[in-house]
Image 1 (spheres, each protein chain N blue to C red):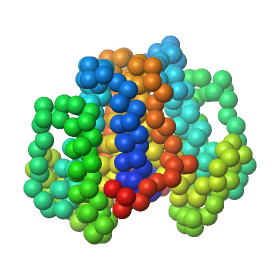
Image 2 (image 1 turned 135 degrees about the horizontal axis):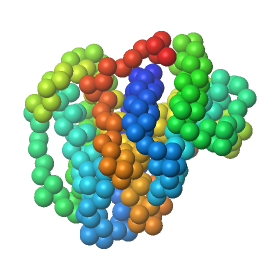
Image 3 (image 1 turned 180 degrees about the horizontal axis):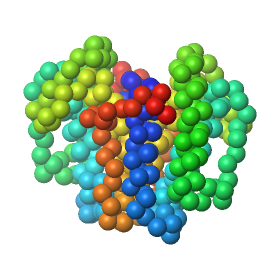
Length: 158
Length: 158
């Protein structure tokens, strides 16, 4: 499971680099499908990942407002900060007790820790797929989605 | 790992159902990004999954031509047929010896079985994300990408 987190984080950082080529207007332009624009897609991925991880850890949810993170720099900084915190959790017991049932305030369902980890992973890959279509609208070559052939960085490098 | 296969297969079938609402022209219309059209996306997902699974199993690759599967019905039938074969493999030893190195004729790299399984999973989720953008162009509500809240069918049901 941890390999998918490494994959997603690495792909996310490559997308941040690519998006440095875009203007703020291009990053925020309303686009069809997904969550509606490029920058908000990143914010949403980061926010969802962090909320569910905190849910798994039995911690209170922290609500972020997109208005406070309305530039690529700010979103990337949020990603880095929250990732450091998540990594600390991954190093401990996140992958243990997979069948523990988790309840969170923003969802009526009750899910196992394992289901939630799968959800976080699929959620990011899905949204990155959407970015790959929008990138072509901007005449950009999307970041490769290949899992194979990637030299995945250790979580300790974050 | 098997849970992601179940997830992908279930999501794929839901997309097939949704795509029944589309005409052959809509399914084949050239679209920006991804592999260029909806029907070929499914064909590509199925083909890539099957090829890598056969690679893992040390079996010779089978090459399919899209021209032979140019309708939703034919692509769905191919998906069902190949899935039955893959399920038989999953029931045996696919998840074992994760570190075995695999070589395939269509790629110069050498990858572990585990990497390839991750690759197959991420590959499908990524392309389905692209479909979700194209669906909005067609005024369709995309299939949910949620992993949580899904009652995943047993692989034995295929």
